[in-house]
Length: 327
Image (cartoon, rainbow, N blue to C red; front, side, top):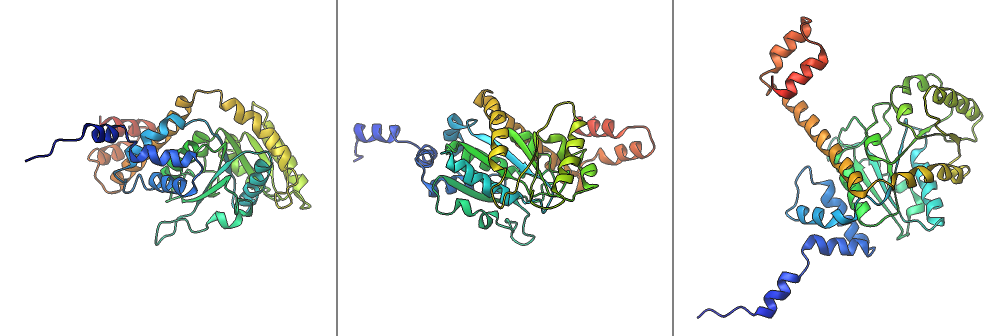
């Protein structure tokens, strides 16, 4: 004889929150383990998504698009991690909670982040108002992997006031940050010289704020003047500041220049801001998928298009368009 279902028990099961909703509730209550779990789910979504990912993403949607996203990029050796550490300390003194995504080079063995920027961010130690996550670049030439963009969602949904995104710093190709961050800070070190000219077509042109770090060095003022000259070429005025992140000198002025730009970005509807991140993910995934197919020789149209390009019958843009459209 089959036992009849208990209507009260069934009602309780129907009204119980699913795993994603429960996890997001824990995140927004400030539970660090829950934030770490969500970040891990988001980070591995493009590799081996878990059965609960869809539930988590649905539960996060109402809380996305509210954090101030600050991108920090620049060439290696500019002191980006030290600058991030100084910004964390300043923001916490203002009472703001801070999430940090530190994008590191990938290990050739494990594929994980090999530098582990969190060890250099002492301002985050033993502070529940700060959460730092190192994310591997996984070979992303534009500076941000899709995993990093998804982890932004996790920290945004957790309710952090400010999210700092530090890129690897491999040079002028790191321009993905322009598609994700509300404010782009490009950090430079004294003595760049001709490197500033080489950066004009990349990092300098995406900058909302230019910073000369290590401002206590003798050649800092000369580099500051060079950057101001380079910035003057642009149609809009870009603040060019000097700081010494190791001592905190100039960090207050940097945030005072950053905050109005970040607040202006928040005037855009949250759904528009989160869709912008989604578009970046889709575009990157499509580009990487097509590149893999081309390298593997899986695209039948590639050989005749290559011949037409080499013999001058097609421009590179036209060849690429036909490949995408399948014509």
